[in-house]
Image (cartoon, rainbow, N blue to C red):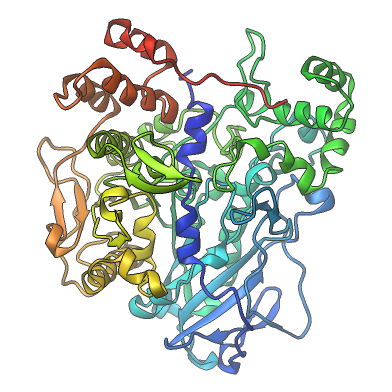
Length: 617
């Protein structure tokens, strides 16, 4: 079995920008809008009425329940169908975010366990002129990012995408962190169905949302046979998980992963303690055993870790399940407080339970065609890693965690370059190569290259961030007006607006037809399928005209090529610099194992040791 990513790697691969959450926060403050009578629709639960977006011919319905609140005995159970209502439900404000740490208030929680709601944006139509039959519109279901531990559907406004491209945009909430993914024998013992026993409750929430869309989206003019799942970072990882899940088969017809990758974790990794004795496989940080051991010590039921292990061993399954369900969200999440990064924490997710998620390596499933083969787009950003390096690299000077200036631009750029190359290999090129062989010319890749931010005082954001992780979301959703930050975010707002329009056109045409082609209006350069031929065009590059514009590129990389490139790179002048890159490969991916790291560079990297895993309790 291949080694799965380290604790730091899993957190990092799902890390989402706090700055992005602030930038995309839209309209959650203030009074709800007035209902628009022409938006009256009937869904399975009853009648709903929404509102018209200011300045756009778009109807919006917010806070529609797609499942029962997963509280009480339904915590760590598969989602159930929602209860119907009487009268007309006013769908004017988004439902609660799912329980998470508040990134703006250290150690405080936000959201609720009652959070399984979705929001719909659709071109404005009177109730008697909703498209029917072949005139129904393609549907795009957005899965937000945030490390699978923070974020919310209500932070994303789909009205620009819907208004300009004749699509229906659905944004959906799903259980996060330990509420969304938790596997333990005690929880399986009381489960009534394989879904309830799976541990993949966040994944099942997304599947339930897709079922709701299949059953109800026609009432809004949407085509239930043309549903595209798209998401970024953790949302992109979740898009891959839906490709892999037999439970999601037939519920969507296309998928887009923005900066995601196919990953999953074994049951042992998600449940065992980190110091499990051989032959047992060690668990990951945040495993269910680690959580239980930490809780027992916090409660005073055990004086130390060894004592907590003895107490846990003496409890039967019913007692363990009751103990976990009796904990408040504050108590459950308190065990992660010392390991937060901008409100995010790592807990195992996308669990190989053998029912919702197959018990096999994701890339092997793609290579063998054992997945939901639908037209697929995968892409990454040219400088993915710069977002994380800005807040964690020794080559950036920070004060109270805020970047002030760059200490060593070359070292920062080199770390960013190799981190992004590895992300490209893992998130786009290697999966695309596997899927292209399995399903033919319906796989497409891209790289987002735009890097034209302005200055914040003396700090040039184009050099600190550039084409960093999550920046492309602003373009896909058409976020132009950031208030006083607009000139800082976009050095040339008109050029950025054009690129945003082009990207939305490609995304919408892919949703409509299964291929991005030349965009919705057929005037853009053709985005061709990923080609396995040597030197053939493979990837669409997205940039402004000043950066080279839209164009196809033949470059594609594998993990092995990225690792080999480090050894031959003349810009890396000594073992310390090369080992810094290699260390990132171990800590942020599985391109190198710890054992390989110690042997590389003829053992020179032993002088620069790796971070060691430590227990939570």
